[in-house]
Length: 171
Image (cartoon, rainbow, N blue to C red):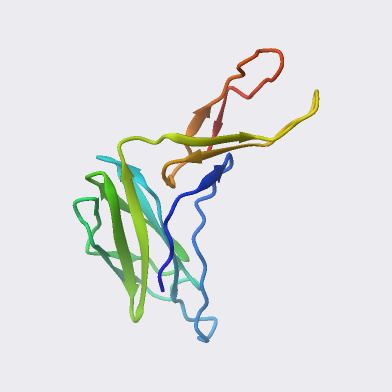
């Protein structure tokens, strides 16, 4: 199973939600690795891999990790997840600018996702819906990577008095 890690348009209320999957016919008490989503990161900083399981882990579980391009995204070779967890956030170190496929394996289930490393987070798209006087309009922003944590986006109106914005929002 391969899970896409490409970034796209980001709503102002960015959710770092994991991709889902099924339990493969196992009982509801079994816990299977079912989702993996990898953030992007700025070179020299830390990104995040979010793993999800079909159910809470019945016992401590070791997840094997690998990066096909460790010079771009360096991961530990394994991580131990505590019993009872239904998800886990695992850091990775962002090195050179580029993209690296990373994997997580528990038993016979291996998931892949892409970690993108950039020189800085950039606004790539701004879309503001039409609005009437006194009404609110939805604004969407796109970033060059999927971020692990909220990003503050500063907004201002080109013509003060015609449009007003909250001074910044988290995306």
